[in-house]
Structures are given as structure tokens and as C-alpha cells.
Image 1 (cartoon, rainbow, N blue to C red):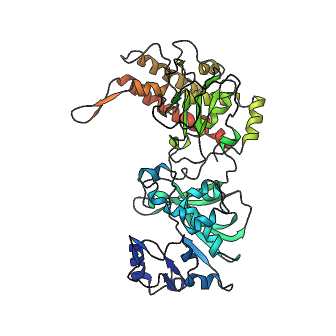
Image 2: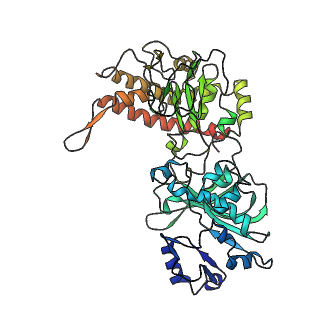
Image 3: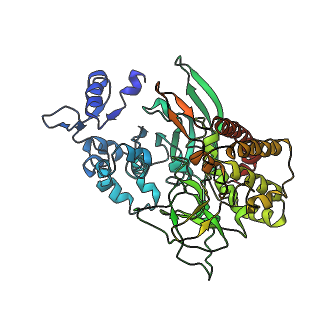
Length: 490
């Protein structure tokens, strides 16, 4: 900023050492710093007393209020809100759960809860974005520059304002190792009905130079899979004497169970395709042979399972598209449900749905296993292509897939993999294997004296790696475009 621009600024930070540097470098150039001078009690366990922007004291700070209350003054708020989603695994791994959730009891949060409901209240950054428009921006000439993931506008619909401009950049450059999209947006304090927009994307290379990533489209999500696509049907012959599993497809023990262990012969398994985003995608998408103990999914029934598979396919997007431009920008949506359901009913999507089935059968996050449950029942993996013990539901439906070269390469590689599997000591001919059960029970390894990984069944390991490469190529070429066309990805 120029000295002229700085002379119009009020600066504030809650971090004490940032505050000290700010005082030293900018104190004489700006109009105000909050607090203006350091007192004996300014240092407060690493934070600045009086600079908590979520407190009532701060909202009513007289230094700020004199300008907020002046209609002849135009306000531009420039802010990089702190990022913390207390329900995210990233937050929990830091051991920060309850300890760093004290902000949830602050004045701003209490006031925000009177107007806003839902998951938006889990994001600390949203408190700043909401309070910007609630307490500081008053007239059409006011504006707000916010550095934040796009979620607050895209899926949480926290604001409905006119966008004046902005750009996207890589979150990796903001003290994290995560490649993800951060939006820097200039919002006018004017209401607007905006459903999509494009912003240029910029990254920084190893030499510190800007790299243009092209224009990135950001479109609003209006509905979730759980509302539009989850199968919520119950059947009169559903029983509650089944089993519940963990994410790895094995029986759960000792965990709090959030769903009933339903069983019905018309159930193929249980699908989770949870939430709009791709934070920790392996925890929010899976396929199991029975219900998962913590729920958030639905039981997959044999009469309509094919049309449910696109949800599972879409949930794997970020694993095969890891660029920073995709994570936190592309999200899951149910907005195309009416078009999708109509085209399913007409038969237009028959071939593509079977392509989704083929992908599902060879995708590693399909954690369906064959096992005998604690209920005494034999659970067979029906969404795989191992026909050693007779056809599976998947193998029967895949007979109707018109195979091109891409499909044939996967089928040939599957045969190579199974031939190798059957030569191992770990192979159990009574079981019907999918790729995950092969990976977990047969593609085993150990460390040698030099700490190098040694694979017990190198032919199996090599065949699995080749299959993974084919699966990624097939997914992005044959599955992804239609996922975007029907807004499973948006």
C-alpha cells in the first residue's frame, strides 16, 4: 500500500507478536492500531487483549465506531479470517477439539446463531465474514476483501452480495501443506442473486514467480446427495439382527453405534457419500458389505443400486485430481437430480451406469469384503468381478456393458490380478475377492534389515499397481465428464 492508502487504515490482529511487528513497522503510517498503545495487560497468553474481533467489546470499540457511525465515510474491510472447522479431521488431529473451540461462546457467535443455522456455524472464518456485513458494512459504497475457502458462498450461502472481482490462489502458501483453493474476493455491500462466476487462478512456483492457472469457475451448490439421492426406503422384512462394520470393512467392536444393524436379502451393502466437500475424502466415502457403525449413508438395495453408484464415483474425484485448483472449489451436489433421474428412467444412461459399475468394482475405496459375520451369516461381496464361486450381481450386470478398448484393458488386468492372487498362500478359495480385500489380505509386505519394503507376493502387488493406473485413466476419461454434466460434481 502507498503511504496515502496506509494513512486511511485501521489495523488489528489478535496475535501478540504480529501486533508488536505491526506497531514497529506501520504504527506511524496508519490512522489507528487496536489497541493504540501497549499497556501492562496487553499481552494475554500470546494474544492481544482488546483485539478479539468476536467480542462485544471489539464490535463496540469507539475507535472503529466513530467511522462506522459516520455515513460520509466509506469502509473497505480487508481480512484474512482465521481458518478452523472444529468438525474437520485436520482440526482434530492437532488435538485442538474443545480447547480451541472457545470462540463458539463468543458474542459474535451468539448473535450469529440467531440468524444462521447449520454447518456454517462450525467454521471460525464464517464468524468474521458474517460479522463484516452485520457490524461494519452499512451502505452500497462499502466493500469487503476476504481471503477464505469458497465454501462460505458456494455451499453455506452465508452471503448474497455483488462480486466486484477477485482471484483464486493455492492454500499451500498460507502456512499449510495442503494444496487447495483459496478465494480472494472483493464483495460489494449490495445484494445480488449470483449463481456462478469465474475468477483467475494464480499459483507461485519454486522461484517465487506467479503462475496463471487459467479462469476457475465457481458455481453454487443448492442440494446435497443425502436429500436428493440417498435411498431412505424401509422394507417390511428388514430385520435388526445384522452386523455393523468399520471403514476397513471388518466387524466393529466397542464403538458407539449410530445406526441399527439392518439386514435384508435385497441389500448389497452400505454406501457413504457424505458432505459436499473433499476434506478427508476416504472418511466421507466408502462402500461396505453391511452398515457402517457411524452412519451418514444408506443401505444399497439390489433393485436400484446402479443409479446410486455415481455418488460413490463422484466421491473419489479429489483422489484422482489433486491439483490445488480442484480441492475446496469442486464439490458434490444433487442439483442435477431431476435431469439425471429422467435420463435414467429413459435408459439414456444405461451404458454409463455400467461404466460406473466397472469403476466401482476396481476402485480401492470400495471396501466390501466377503466374510462370515458375528450374526452367523455369510456376507458375499457382490460388487466385484471375482466369479470363482459363481456370478456376482456386478458380473451379471457387466455382461450388458458394451466394452471398448478402455474397458477391455481393465478386464484383462483384472484377470491377470486374479491369476496371481490364486497362486498365493493367503488365497482362500471359499471367498469372493474385490480389490480392497486383495490389497488388505494378500498384497502384504514387511521391512527387511535395511528398512526397505519387501512384498510377500510381488506379482499381486505389481498387478494391483498396473490396475490402479488404468483405473485413474478410465475414471477421468469415461466417468468424470458425465459426473459434471449431471452436477454430481460442480
